[in-house]
Length: 119
Image 1 (cartoon, one colour):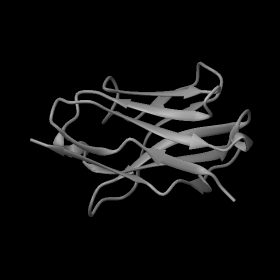
Image 2 (image 1 turned 180 degrees about the vertical axis):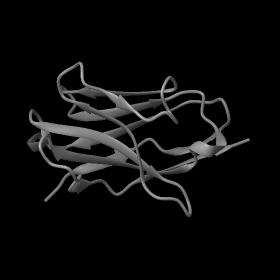
Image 3 (image 1 turned 180 degrees about the horizontal axis):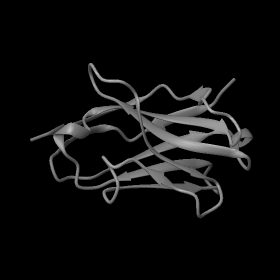
Image 4 (image 1 turned 45 degrees about the vertical axis):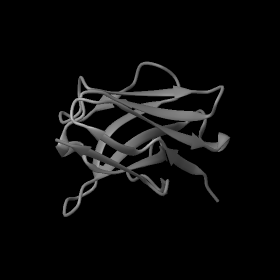
């Protein structure tokens, strides 16, 4: 069973920063794509960033590009999301997810962590 556990959510004022962390089981190393999604109230879940454990293949949605940075730390088994310049519209539950490279869907999910940005 597994093993993706998010932490680091909270409340912050607009313009502030938060760093989310996802502790990942070692089974996800190597041939997995790691991602962060978010879901705001009344909206569909949105893919906002993804990467592989090796450098060079990152994706960002237009809504977060230039403000958020996804990274991996193989020594700590974590996938991190540094969020700067937060806006009220970034308020959502943030989820860590994983899939193998050839999969279309993300079958593995964390429980989510709430991020609230006040104006």
